[in-house]
Image (cartoon, rainbow, N blue to C red; front, side):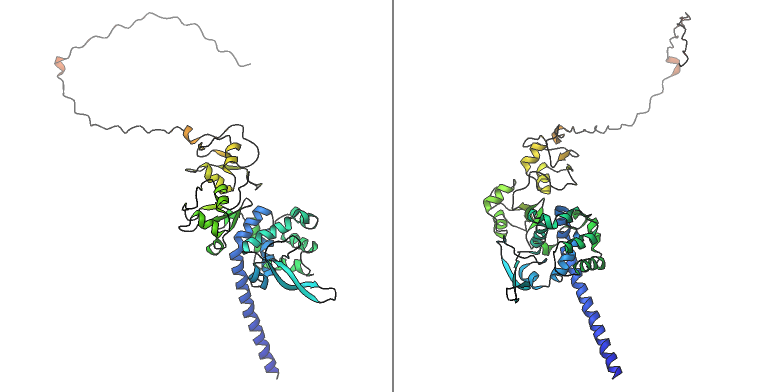
Length: 371
């Protein structure tokens, strides 16, 4: 009997370890898949990437929960009074007047990325400033205070919510992402691109696939063709074929770059001002005006371009103003021909003029002593 109990205990232990390994693998895959958007949202909205990933892992069980699968809701965000989008219903923690557990209304999103962005806006909502506003005054590298702050603000009802977040962050070393910038990681991978929508400077955009036209992007992103032509200075008609990977904004670009850490851009070789507009999600006409440039003017390599704020005092140097240094043509080297020997007896020697021995008197120079 004793041996049987030991055997059963060992089976449970092995099964538990196998399950744990499977769950770990799912968590790691989730982190790999969503770390890019977590970093971009940290840069844009100020929510630490470690906190966002830990919440996503916990609330969605690494993307395997009913809400995550059915409605791309990775953070358990409920509908609230003002939600007008699609909805998913699930029993959670709401009861009717008779104390019976009833279904709660949760928001449904078209992609996990859209949910990650909505999570940031949920915490930043001015109407919830009294509740979550203090979080953004916490050091973004202090994930423990952030976790405890979320619990204090009532984000979740679990008494151990903060401890669970901290445990996940430390187990998977998620705080390493808090010290990174979006550029420190690779571009979004293919499965994220298939989600269709990205965000730059608080503006949504899509990237063109192979052989896609402007009309294709409009259909894929559910955006009017007229809107795309208005938001993107490089687009002219619906049949225009786009380069693979070309960025197409589906919302109006901003008047200035909103990331506080960067105010200037240094022009690179072969870069034009429109490239800067696309890179930072800033309207081209605003960039031109802010930098005292006229349409058709292109800044020189190394010129400083102001991304936000008032006008510069002087416009940057233009590429057309840079003088190209034309290298001198290589001289053709001709070997000297040997000189003919001239007989010395035929040379006439002219005597040198006599040296003038007249002395010239110069004024005496007296060196003054230093004061």
